[in-house]
Amino acid sequence: MRFDILTLFPEMFSSPFQESILAKAIEKGLIEVRTINIRDFALDKRRIVDDAPYGGGQGMVMKVEPIARAIEQVKSEDPSVRTIYLTPEGKPLNQEMARQLSSRSHLILLCGRYEGVDERVRELFIDEEISIGDYVLTGGELAAMVLIDTVSRLLPGVLGSDRSAEEDSFFGSLLEYPQYTRPASFRGYEVPEVLLSGNHQAISLWRRKEALRRTWMRRPDLLSKASLSEEDKKILEEISKKDVS
Ligand code: 4GT
Image (cartoon, rainbow, N blue to C red; front, side, top):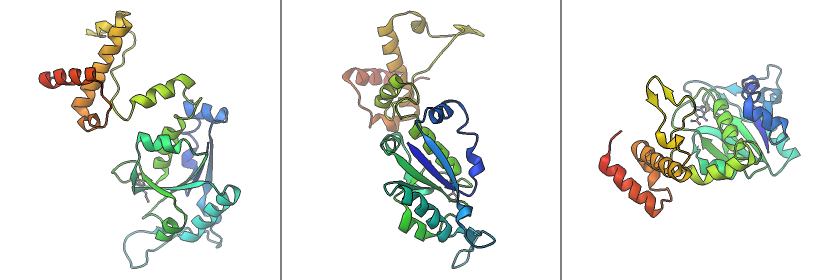
């Protein structure tokens, strides 16, 4: 899968893709991440990419022409590329959207700065607008990194082939159960005994219970969308009766 990032700050993307899982994914050729400096598509001698807003007001607006040229260059190489603008006004990103995006072979990610882009960029060139949450950033770059990270880990081979499918069925519906590793005892705080028991059926049941408990306590909104078995519903009834920690 290929990502073309249109940005005024390509340097921001150097380190996130040079570490760990994403670096390996690039090495293996599973993903390709390219940055395109929008300023390279400004043709005037000062290479101006922004201007004051018509109608007045605070800040600057990113001009349409450099962005148009940059997008058109990528599209001339691959007319089927999908163009995404990262903005707080976009559709909130979730696991299901990440899964759908992971089926595409090529995305353009447009990163805004200042007060954002001229509206005609959105009308003429953008297929989809995505937000990573209800808060404001200084630019779309961090949002683009978040999107690339969450989509890339869903591609076959990026995490280790057996893991991804398993996780997909689970996530989006329930929070994760608690995890422990050695030592079994730390300053008097013990790992739950069942995890040391070797009883895999008991361990699975405990984990399902803890996932349900955590979801009920922290994200009850997720439970209405989750696919729950009859046993899950019984467990939840018990949890809601107790209602502690
Ligand atoms: C928040 C998000 C985002 C920004 C988000 C245009 C100029 C938008 C600054 C940019 N803030 N981008 N993608 N929540 N800020 O996704």
